[in-house]
Length: 185
Image (cartoon, rainbow, N blue to C red):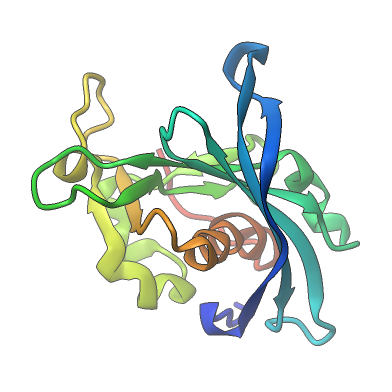
């Protein structure tokens, strides 16, 4: 399996925060601000360059990381419609953090993404090792009314856009390139 490392990802500010709107759940329009980054992934022989937006709704209800330009690599084509949502934590001891559900891209192509169940934490790709200190069960960091309390989530500070972008690549792009298959839900 290919060796990927988050420290080989260079995230450079491309465009300062500006007003923006984008499609939300159910086709609703979301209004907020957007910050764009040029991302050079040094994990490839030829550096792959992305343009990625971090979008923050005016409701200040989290953030969304979504690619604007995807490198010209056939495997990465489906990622131009992919995103990672970061939500505010709500549990004591974790306030002031965001979390995203640990969904990885589905390398088999059957689905868009797969959740990694809590008991499969040790089966994550090796490039997640430096990020494991950020991994928790959702019920630890946020109230949950559904059945996803034991799902794995990854913590991130709200203003740490670089880490958000790195998590996007680790969960979506590298999984596809390495053809990583995990026994997911």
